[in-house]
Length: 554
Image 1 (cartoon, rainbow, N blue to C red):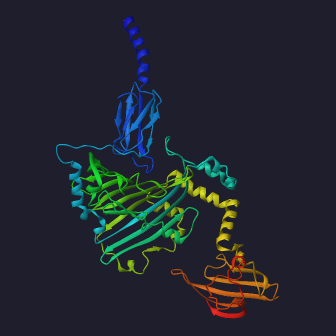
Image 2 (image 1 turned 180 degrees about the vertical axis):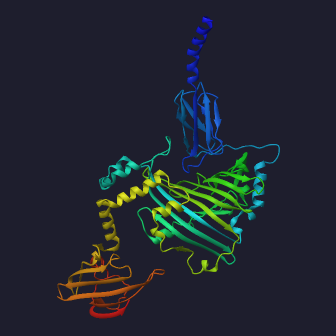
Image 3 (image 1 turned 90 degrees about the horizontal axis):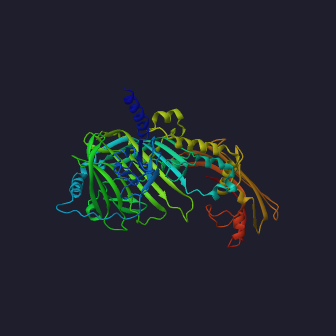
């Protein structure tokens, strides 16, 4: 018995470390540009045959007691990714893959028709009933989020003296995963809108209920951040991007421009779908490459992920990706999520940026009667009066998805920058340069380019002007100036009062009284004579100046 106890003890001592050395690795594989999961990627221990494929959500799991020192992730159309492994430990290793710019090899299919082509023809056959733009009417709530990130930030830029007061922003440089390139999020906007559409008569209306822009409160800019701009409908034969018509992978002419491959079939959101890959037939055509999942019975596109062909000639655009997901509402498929990502090319390896627009849709209603007053007026985009003043509590309750940590940092970073004296100084200088006025509270002095001028009648002329600012009133504006000529030794002056009668369109009414010299025959809309630039670069001499008094409505 003692012999067996001793044998058991020795076996336990030597065998236990073997069990302890087992390595378990789990993680997720995503696209570098879109952050979308990548299915069917192969993850193996380098130098072995031990591996696994990622599932439809991009997840993988490996477990072995004899691993190598690294894992390798590969997939056709992407650059391979290698990551170090800690032996004998449970660990999470997420990997980010970058699309390859190399052409995919041809696939030869024999003994029968390509099954992907059969499925594609069913997509075209059912296109009309699956395209939501053919409905009589629809409405939904849409949430848009737009983000811009700086990339390729050089050390020289970080050491720039003009940017020294803002050096803290470099602490916000982020990298979502170990092998992805770092970026600095610097702009974010959010809009919440209601969309209404009817086919007869054809009308579409967007009502922006709430808008939040980091560092900016401007109604005109906000209208460009809603849902009406840069919309992509995959069922259109041509997709308009950057003023060019790209052939859609669901175009009626798809088989002429694309090759399609059936990869697999699986459940996606409890619906059985065919997963297909597509790529351009020929180089240097305005096409896409990517994958889509097709519902097995309606042949509607359930999800599509595509990017422009790498040899498509678009200035300043390094890469662009589009991801769309659809959900079934009654018998019709409607967009539930939409993403557009643009990677703007760096010039001579300088700083570049990435733009990401993500959109989600809720409260979808189709073929319901929409009140006629919704479509009244000529504007297709309306901004509610309180849209720019919504509270943080409102956004917490109404935004479709909570903000990620990096997105929250953008708001905080921009709010911090706005409090810096250097930022206020730069803004004042830029505002002074473009508007000509210096804001000193209730009044604005200027314009600066009229402080000095010269002409034959007055000689050297000096002028000081002012107008009331929005801090005094947003409805009433008072304006005036006083000028003096050293040669004619006379004072000149002007005073006016204007009242804003409407914002849309922007209209004023008021009166003006003016005693000054003016060029005979010159229009009221002509370039000002009392301008330092006109004094220096005037082509025709100011020989017809005459003192005049004018009273008029403005």
